[in-house]
Length: 304
Ligand code: NAP
Image 1 (cartoon, rainbow, N blue to C red):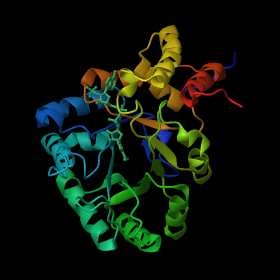
Image 2: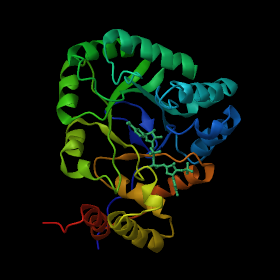
Image 3: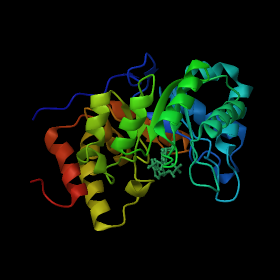
Image 4: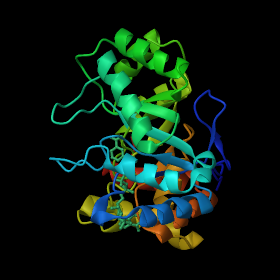
């Protein structure tokens, strides 16, 4: 049975010269449970020590519906300020463009201020990747592109990406940008397989975008599956996990990483041991049969 290639030790972020780990760590949940800067620092170290050097945050992380906007960035900023050497050990990604209580704002003025505010909270002079978090339907892509090109020209942002964009929205923004987008960040997991068949990953390969998978465990559902479908997907992952001596979680990450688009799963755990465990995903081997067995379980119907 032929095996799919293992992921490389590092990947290029889009067409840029930035090398990233093939698995990332996300800080959506960083401010949960009143986490202190010392506790947050331990998680950052857990990721870096495991070779997970690509870190993803967003200005809205920490927002609880009423307040907390910017808190996850600010907490990471405290960690970086206390240990300045850490900054150069990571590829730092953040996002903006969701402005509570309004849904989305990508007017040039808002974008400029949002990027400056993120840098101030993070206490850094630039981020390596800045992503539009969700598309603002009321913003003309030409104006968005101009503001983003300016951010790169100013040195505040090294590369640009998008999240939750449709293929047409990506194409429209790319049309007006003076540089190539490097990444797209949709929800992808063994429980969320739309991307595999709706053209999003094909477009990513065509445009050279690195796909970053958010909620790679379905927001944790894969760890405790409840529905018959979720249980069937978990069982298909378990077959490979047990054979190779890894957890289901690790098998799930590696299943995404086996796709030819070079998907980078963003680990969502805020538990040091679970973050470190994620690095085992680089060693899991998939055959076509096993890979498609997970897909078929997720589809719920056989392949045509
Ligand atoms: P996820 O990996 O699907 O879910 C993580 C959750 O699963 C955590 O609450 C974790 O709890 C729990 N979990 C339970 N058992 C686990 C196990 N064995 N191993 C690992 N986790 C386990 O990811 P996510 O947190 O929903 O999202 C990941 C990242 O994607 C975010 O941090 C963020 O960077 C990004 N994201 C982006 C968007 C977007 O719109 N662009 C949206 C959502 C998320 P513990 O912490 O206790 O381990």
